[in-house]
Amino acid sequence: MKNKTLISDLRKQKGLTQEKLAELAGLNVRTIQRLESGEDASLETLRSIAVALDVEVIEWFCCKVFQKIYFSVKLRK
Image 1 (spheres, rainbow, N blue to C red):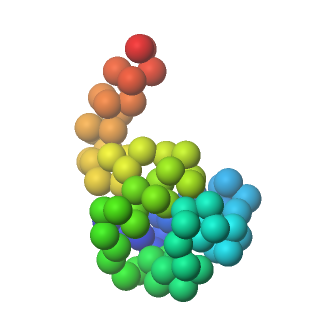
Image 2: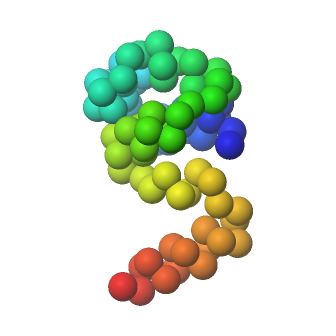
């Protein structure tokens, strides 16, 4: 997974600073900085960030085709 751009892009889309994202996710701001610089994270850390950003963790791990299928089915419910 490409944490470097994904988390940063999502954070910026939501209008959040690294400090605010860290606060919402219950993490240290240094953790956010490390992830945005490309370091790996545990699934639990990613889950905390996903909740804070109001996205699904699965969005970060799936190929584009699967994402389209998953989200089109999810939207029909």
